Image (cartoon, rainbow, N blue to C red):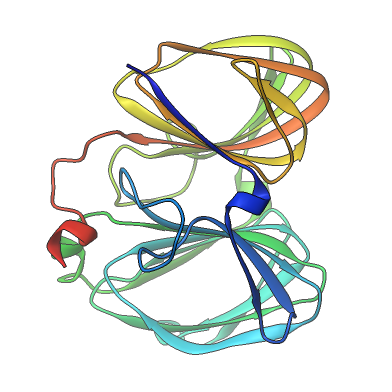
Length: 248
């Protein structure tokens, strides 16, 4: 039997930070918080909007792979692997393989919007590796338009990102007005975040900043009146290693 979770923005964990300089809505909060639980090899997912410039001071990471997608505005980041401040702009992506440990700071500029998503690539193995860092610029990503859908690939067969977490595909889909049917892999979980517009997914209306997760399904019908922008992660429904939450 198929399963589907649909969380509107107000049903996600909402959190102001730094006296309201940042606001985060979290489709997948940290496991000690109320809300959806980590699943597949996804561990954490936050959508951040900066109404003022503020900085996350130097803090440690280990084991996880962490991706930051900048959709508008800019940020500056520093880490103990490179020991320099680096700027990222709209369309850029930052990837951290935290490995045996790295410290990291972020200064997010007023007006910016971004995702930060954490993956568990097999914590027991990655803890034994050196940390790695890579920034990908917007012009490294290619998009193609086919059948009314513009598809930008981040990670997968056509995406340039190097990633250790297995069986992950990430893309952004821009739909024009119309009705679309997409065949799905029943062994995979699909996580959708609506960045802009409205879209019906299998006749269920999804609004901006909503989060939809489903699996065990053979096809999905998307219906769009005007325009919609979906961020999509395809991941395995089952992994063949003990995930972080199962080990600790």
